[in-house]
Length: 143
Length: 143
DNA sequence: CTAGAACCTATGACCAACTCACAGGTCAAA
DNA sequence: TTTGACCTGTGAGTTGGTCATAGGTTCTAG
Image (cartoon, rainbow over all chains, first blue to last red; front, side, top):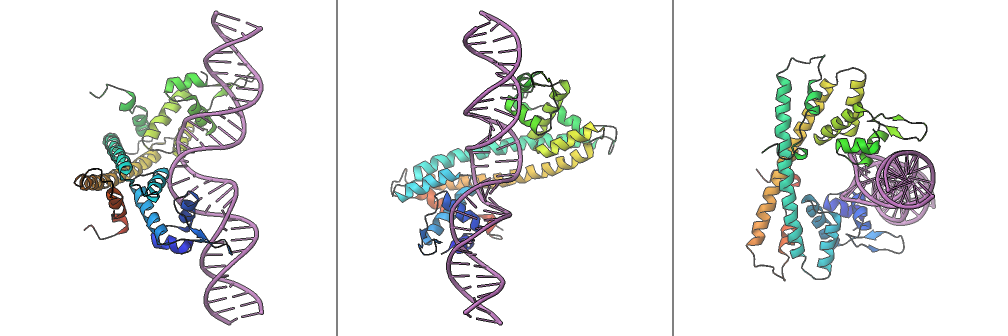
């Protein structure tokens, strides 16, 4: 398979295929005549794996490491599990943060709604932002 | 105030102060003798506003625009409200996505837990990732 | 046989929002 | 006067690609 064929098969752009190749995630062979890169079914498997891992929040270096481990016939699973669990914790932290943010935004917006519409004199929303108390920088304030 | 004093007052790094200055969010005066930049209370206000707006997900160009509007004695609020509402919708979308991701990660991890511990022969987590069905790319699969 | 379309190559710039490093200038205290 | 803490500007690095450019190749149609 050539670049675009692989790209189409994995539903990514040719640029991404080339990028991943530069990054060492894919290992195409080369035709010395025209210098073209040729990919096989294993590359497709690697690419699909890489894309799915990306969706889970794995970084390219992590993915490269996982693939490398597998190449050496080591099971990458223990490492993957670690990263996976870390990533899960991270996702949960992100969710909590965003939910807190959302709560504050909603209440700020409702405070704005209760004010005279489109007040051309006021800086109401801006004041809301200015006086936005960041719980992260005001430790102990929320308890 | 000099760079570091402002940075300390707003709890950011001097690099950030310099960066925001380059980006036009802060407008220090200059001492022609030593070329130092001097910031006043208004700059501190602007910087604090900028940081809070960043926490809410406003981009630097948006913040620059808001500050610019305020400089011209226009109330930036209507614009701010629009961006704010867009940003709220975005936050809610992000939360939903992350929650879906989390659910899938948790069930993948519990599937892994049920397997023999540390199986040196298997590629269980990797298989889980490989066969991870992305709902976004399999429309209609989830309903 | 040849023109053009569609592909291939490598390289490098660009995005956001900083962060860090570097080389050299300034200033206050000991 | 020397040390150390600060200041300056510039440029590069971060992440995961995307886009542009310039030039080479292959395929298809006329």
